[in-house]
Image (cartoon, rainbow, N blue to C red):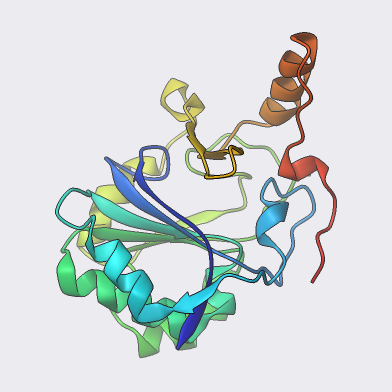
Length: 214
């Protein structure tokens, strides 16, 4: 079994409590208008063996406070997702948080077939026409579901956005490109582009690229 991978990073401090492993899967069939992660929409070319990725995850297990999975759309690869989460569960008792653009009811069969693999699930598509007043969400239609006792560690995110939510993690890949982890406030990336432009730098962010190839 192989999995389409966008990126793996540790530590991530803006997508759940503590220092977490962040796993972004590549490919999204939902493609919400206004998504800031357009670069993760296309299927991509980086398909690696699931067991290899589990080994990479396991290397962080002793240091991490949990695993956060996003994308892309994780449930576009349902079998690989289940195996990855089981691989994490085999090496860590920490909570698993998964972000999806699907509604909870659409995932009932997968959740019933894989009980206990996801501790907290953030569901619902990003809606740029709706306000963003709640923590850990891009738009207020998105719902946090606590599915296990471990998931109680995420219950504190059932609250209004505040100063704690204005942080973003910034990383650099091998090509020197910068990318961020977190839930930026509306307009943050546009303000970043304007700030860099005022300093004489050209900046292109994935939300400004338009639709990527399938």
